[in-house]
Structure formats: C-alpha cells, structure tokens
Image (cartoon, rainbow, N blue to C red; front, side, top):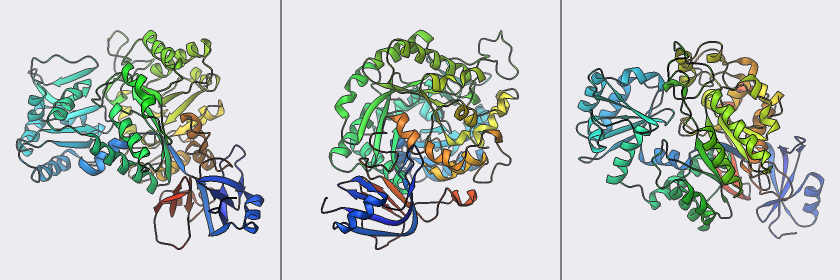
Length: 553
C-alpha cells in the first residue's frame, strides 16, 4: 500500500460503471483508484488515511465530448463578448464602449451575434451604423454557431473584400441590391477576414497556452476533468502538449484536427498535420481524431437535408443545402486515417450529411477497421431509417446543449424548415432505444459556457433552463437523469477513446472525481440547474475548490 493512500468515506459514490453501482467509499493512491467499498474500508486498518466527505455525493469527473476549449479560454481572456440573446442595438452600443478603450487601429474581435439577427445585420444600412460606431477600428464578430462572421468596412478592406471579390469556395460574401458587401460573411468567406486579422496581430504559442489553461480551469470549475476538443489546430495541440509536459494540464484532452480549413482560419491543416499529431501526444493529451465539417448550419441553409428547405422547390440548386465534400472524398478520408488508427468527429447538422457519414463508416467497417471510433457531431436531424445504424456501425452520437432545449438556434429552425421536421430536433430517446451511444458536450464557446448542469436539466426536461424560452422541444425525446449523467461520463469516455483511464470510478482508473453537495440522481431536477461541485479532483489532485474546507486531498 502506498504511504499516501487516502480513503474517501461517508459519501454516496456513483461510480457510473456499467452496472451504475453506488458505493460508500473509495481509495486513491498515486493518482489512481485502488479500491472501492469493503476493500477501501479495509485499507484504513492498514494505515491509510480517512477523508470524511460528510455525506456528500461523488461522481466521476465529467467529460465534455465536444468543446473548443482554447477558443473558449481566448474568448474569456482576450475577446469582446456579447450574449447571443442580445439585440442589435445592445450589440452596437457595446461595440461603441469597447472600441473607446482600444489603441488606435486595433481590431475588435469576439461574439456572439445571435442567429435570429442575420436579416438585420445583413444590410447596407446596418453596415453603415457599424462603421460609424466602430470609429475606424476593424471589427470582426462571430455568430452564435461560430460558422459565420460580421465584419465592418475597415475589416473587409484589410481582407481585400469589395464589390468585385468573388465568393470563396465553401463561403459567401453577402451583398446588397447594388452588389456591395454587407459585412455578413458566410463560413469560408469569414476566413478571409480572420486571416487578415492574424497577419496584423498573430496569436502566438504563449497566448495559446494561456488560453488553453484558462479553458481547462473553466471546465474544472464545473466538474469537467476530460474533454474532446472538436477542432484543434496544430498550434493548439502544441500548446496542450507543452502544458502537459510542464505538469500544468489538469484534464484529459483528446484532439480532433480538421482535414480542411472551414471556419477557424487554421493554417496548416490536412495530411501534414494529421501525420504530425503523434509528436504532440503526451500523458494526458491524445491527438487521435480528425475533424470533418461535412455541412454548415440550418439558419444559413448550409446544412445538407434530404428534403428541401422551407419555401424552396426541388429544382432550386440550393434547396437542400450541400455537403462540403463528395461521398467518395469523405469515405477516402475515413479509410486513409483508419489505416493510421485515427478516428473522426464529423460535423453534421442535416439528415443528408448524417446519412453520408453512416454510409462512409459502413465502407470503413467493411474494409476491416472494426475498432476505429467515429462520431456524428450535433446530428440534430436524423432520418428514421438511419437511427438503428448508429449502434450497428458503432458510431457515437455527439450532442450539444443549445439544440436540445428551446433557445435562439432552435427557434430559427422554424424559419427555414417545414413542420414536423423543424420541431423534431435531437431524437435522443429514439437513439437510445436503438442502442446508440450518446456522448454529451457543450460546444463552448458556441454555447456561452461549458457548464454541463443546465444542459443535463435540458436533457431530462427538454426545457430551457434559463426560463427565457417557453415550452419544450420534442418532449418525448427526454432522457432520464442517469442516462444524462452517463452521457457526460462513461459514454463520453468511450466515444473519445478515454474509457481505459476515466469516465467511471473503477480500480485502476485515474482518480478523477467531483464532490457535490446534493445527489443529482435523487434531488428535484430543478436543483440540477444551479448544481456546482464543491471540489474537483484530477489524477487525485484537487484542481478546483468552491469554498475553503479542511478535508485533505
């Protein structure tokens, strides 16, 4: 027995193992779980030290299956912030206050512009107002999906965007009736402005490390001790690797690097980065996935659907949205990376792109790659006949909170999709009934926070935890509280390839756990919204404390 063995006692410990076992004690030594239940108590007689948790509840550290942690940390530390619920006047006033504090010529960047404001900001009149209030500073804001950008004239000039600039492949420069850019830049078009900003004010490795550490600390404060970053540049992977080798990475990190540039402005991307991923692997960093953005988002009609968008005919070339690559190209990427043992997280928001992924994975499985991991990211809309294919092909459903309860994004679906499809969002219950693995994630900073607790409430109730949006979103698709917690622990670990080290409190796994004041399995569901850990532990070390206490560990 280690000289530093600690036995945590007097607690309700939900191990989240396959049997959903509950125990009253567990022992930790050298950063790992070494015993539970009776064996943990027996260690006390052998000289282990007791830590009395005073009747509190313990869960494994939570795992966020879909996050952009460095972008979230950057937003918290360096960016201009406005909530996606803000109206146009509120945004303009906030921009005016922010630019007044900037040095001459400095860029103002950040977000988020709510999806419901697209029609208002996409006009010459609004651009003129933005130009006036920004006082000559280049302004570049993201929307709430992070897929699109809102730029003022100064930013567009620096990016070389004017009336004769052609739309880039995979993007659109929106224009007014006279052909002049309005400042609303869809997907790849926004990257033109992002790259112009990066040329003037590059975001170096030291700042990336600071942003990454901030993102991890924010996660720890909500009980998250592991996550899969959903779009990780080579530079972010280098920052995470360096944090880990310096002993400053307080979470398991799984990286997913994009095969092509789409909405983040990463450079380089593709095969050379994929082949170099192992160079950034370390004890707590696993760069083991690629990321493919297979379509866009429904509000801009860039998600790929089997049926046409609302008010559009089959003959319209844009009626179904579109995928960013052909079926053959998608399958090619999956087959090539499967040979390297590299899995894929694939952004799909329309049912046509979901089907394309399942078809491509079927090719991979037929080629003999049975254990490579695949995730459909978001998958708000899934054709009925495709639901059983998730379990059949061992494809995980990666779901994100802003889509499973009423909110800004869900409301916009009614503007672009016919019923009943517009209301049949995120079929979580049907996925579970067909044996699918559901892994939950925040998509922070698309979501304003990585906080999983309101999202867990939303999974169980299908209601908006803030109370700002009434009603429920397809209430029949609600999950139980235990299913919701599994999606943030064991299932998320399995989806990301972390089940060997975390996701449940079992002997041999990392001592990643959180101490809660109440039991989310048995309290009124409304109390879960405000639930926060009193302490978060990663590899046996306390990495977050809500209040000072005298418990050792």
